[in-house]
Length: 330
Ligand code: ADP
Ligand code: MG
Image (cartoon, rainbow, N blue to C red; front, side):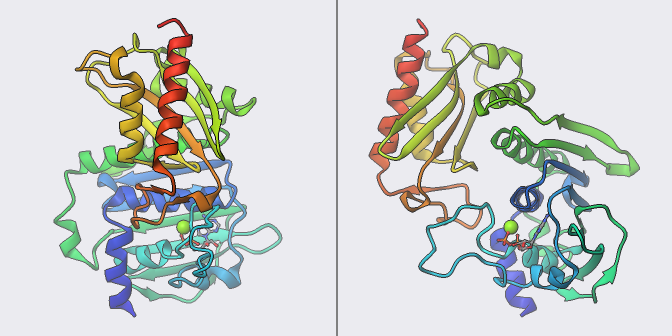
């Protein structure tokens, strides 16, 4: 069982940033309005995620660590994925490859903690905590040292963590996010965004200004289009706004950050003759649709997607973005 966990863990958790992604997604799944992440040494020695979500009851702590026990997949439901988590593997995997403590408190219950290290679980014990969950993961991959060799510099890993948080923060503008770096006994704030308010477009606009800069937000056009069950929303930067070669493309499918060739290609297509060749479009775009119309389970890291009708999605994106850009007089 330990060996199975460790092998599977490599699929789910490739690097600190993938651990952070899983943990923050869990916090968001639990309805958190505030998520605070602390890392040290690029996440290798410490990843801590604190949230104010609904927590886990003491009796469910051990279950939360069990592989697949919590999976919302039951075969027939494979494509019907509404929340971020759907494989029930993240905590089991992280507990198999690192030293993890999971401390949580559900409303109306007492706080409790469970620890797991290299797959070995400790008994549940009482712990003091206000409502929410704290997951602390130390010494990631200590149990699978071969994995450590694939990691890049602490700086590069920390950047990847920052990138994951920024993407998730764009997808959840009503949630406050903080990233701190505690390397070398420091405690440095790397990133912070407060919860936005207003309607979704207002909130997203505010969040994009906070993350990508006022310059982006003030030079972006609103995208809001629909075609055959696919909804496309977000902001796309005017061709005149450009940060040279720096790519700022943030794409989401059913609120999950994705890096998808089809969507990136479509975005490029929308700007085709509007941008000079050495410039890249900048945009934050969200596609939402019935989960039946897209398979997000292509890769365990969940960053690629497969649409049932790729041409339809491509057409929607190209047409809607192009139309909005041309309408704005550019
Ligand atoms: P999945 O998210 O796919 O269900 P995970 O291994 O990521 O699997 O998490 C297992 C379960 O533990 C979740 O389904 C949830 O019930 C619980 N859980 C994990 N993290 C949190 C959290 N931050 N707040 C509340 N519950 C959590
Ligand atoms: Mg999960």
